[in-house]
Length: 155
Image (tube, rainbow, N blue to C red):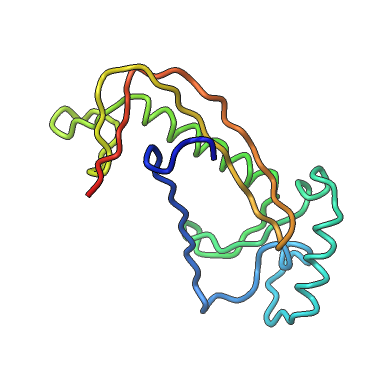
């Protein structure tokens, strides 16, 4: 990253439910739940994904558990990436609004680690999608001018 560490807050979260059975790209290949995947199956899938073009990967099916529908569903990798881009763009829209005002029901940033004031800055983002162990797809969300300046409060 080109931004100094003291000028950014990077976060990554992994939530994993070990009680759920295999799904994802392996389940999407067969359009069904894979009960017990073994190392060789996963290694074969990883090798295949590593060699595939981005367009081929986008067409792959992804099998997942839908909390809303309370059942397994099938989608495409392209749709997941498109939804990720939309989510990142929505985050940027909210951040551009500046500080959240709880009393006025104003949408914005509510984070005690960040101080916000009027000023000029730019904001953008990157979507990083890791498929298998060796294939990473990136999408740049265009940087835009903002009327707020952010500083990180060191504690």
